[in-house]
Image (cartoon, rainbow, N blue to C red; front, side, top):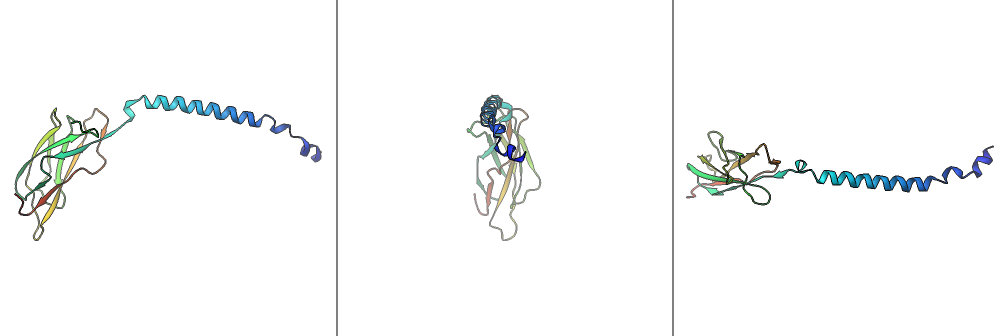
Length: 149
């Protein structure tokens, strides 16, 4: 009986064509799913960045305009900017919301420590609820330099 099974190759006769059919159906299904997903704009997320009016300031009270932009450089309205101390010290966080031009103005008063010649001020963005934006990467920082006017 074992010898009869050894010579019987009917079990694999339809296997190659079944694999080809499964592959074609799988590729067609994947193509339909990819077209469906690429048509959905809600799944795409744009990273925001901040463009400060002054990237280098002195350790004095300074008015800074922050422009929030999308990856194409277009201004984003309704975003909240939060300015906090990095290696330079601030008394607290300064916040503002961008206008229709993507601009927000804040007044900051950074301080440097003893024997510290420079430091940074950090800017974070809370994206608007609509628009599919995020702020996961680090934004441009403001450099605070002793003696800069």
